Length: 87
Image (cartoon, rainbow, N blue to C red; front, side, top):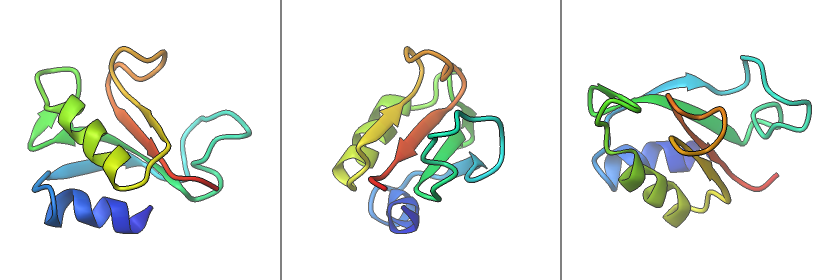
């Protein structure tokens, strides 16, 4: 997961703001609590849902090995992108 976060910047050129790693209010089975997921609320200085390139970032997360990728259009993810790796 941390390698994926790093490569979003170094390999794909995204400037991201991570809003959650382990904290927040998630389901008991959330990958956040396993330490293998993070949420992003800003991409390249733009808030997710306000024209930020979330689709490109979501595709990059998948290419980097994330198997749980959610964002605008997914329930509860209108304002952020969630990238989760296998447990």
